[in-house]
Length: 316
Length: 316
Image (cartoon, rainbow over all chains, first blue to last red; front, side):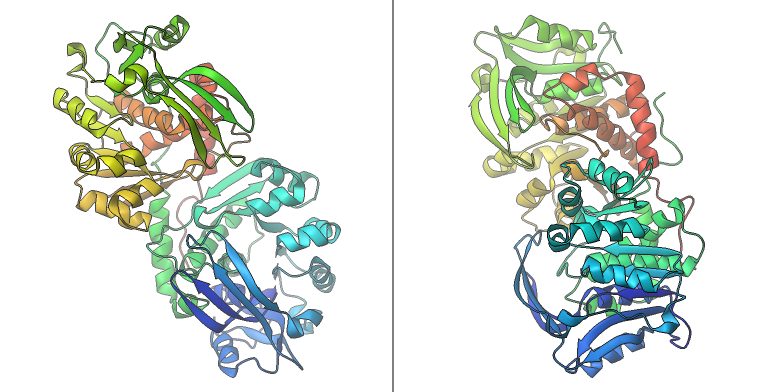
């Protein structure tokens, strides 16, 4: 999807950053990252995608070019006086936890998302992990969306739970890790947490992210377990959740039918496949090098991996 | 399957114990347990099952009765002078790890499995987690088996790796946790470990157990991801791996066709369902109270949970 002259099908709001990452497999310095970058690169394989975010004057021209070459509409990417958001993190030996070593918000501290007029009739919206007050601001500017998904993190659960409730209540799908869902709903079991998000916080779809163990979609009286794609090597998990969400929304926008349980489940499968590419190398490297044929092949392989028994197993 | 007058379809060799268990949800004292008990109770829903094990004179009559009432053939259960094997363990708050507080092997220290003549033509065999030297002894006595599966643990990997290699080389399917498979093969990635078990240790099927995250079956050029059944509450994970294996073997024996990839995958689904009952209460309580109708219902629900998209998803 290389055309940027049309209205984006999908608008992605989030951070744009320069990340310095260390994992047991190596490290990178000041690689382009942030939730909006990861999610939009993923979605760009599937639909016309526009970013809303902020960078500083030091944002590298080659990073901007990379996004443009992926067909991503950058008219919502503001360049402000000052420096781009920097993040530095280090993963544990098993990569199941990470330490933030340094966060310099820089221009991101004053981020106040403005949706370009041209984006305001886009049908699909992903609210990356930013302050829920800003997510609410975006929602006010995007009244015509067919489907909105939002991501969040423990920081907002702890500091802005009421605003986060408003976001969850307003969107169609919320993504959370199992830990975040339990923390926010004060439940100890994922299923209870998901049910509380649906019944008490008013969201229709809850997508619980379990990293290398895949994800679970909850809706009213509906559960789908979506395993991760089995990989020979994971080098850097950074951005995998955003790539997952970007693939999901990208697929829905690509299909552009009224999203239902079946299409959302299929979209999660696409997100799962996209995330599997992301983690194979540092930062956006693997994702940027991925070709649509590889995605199609992995999608096909995945469906074999998870196909348990044709046609239906019953006790006889 | 209530008849014990016939030759068992499935022979299960393993420990019979009295377990004292503490989890965040409570504790029990001297409940009947051990790999042979858990696996046979699980298999008994599906086929005629015989145990090979050892208990002391203090083994409670009601425990014996419970096994008999489940239709389990106890003619291979030796009663020796001395006390029954005791195990005491405590789980961490998140139940992802456990401490062994006490192990009294008692009569189990001298366990030398003898397969009753009547069992020697049984077609299916499960070697529960015991010393691989004893597992080899059982294999010598069971030359006619159609399908043999074995379980093991880190202790044997560390102390009897060569014997364990012989076992793995002789059986059709080995079950290991992801940690054990990596430890034994000295690989850091599950897929590499499984491939090494197949190519260097000569086993056909490798079943990697990931607890609440399900399991993965590896065979030559074949992977199947089998998610766990999503549960509202897990009270006690003790025995889940044995119940899993018991359900798997029980299903194969129930079908009694030459096991192939498809039937083994289906059997793993059955094992997955059986394990989901096991962990819902302490020790064997939940499993002993389960009815076949509940198993059939959960099997049906599970197939909805993991059914991702009819009929085939492709990028268009």
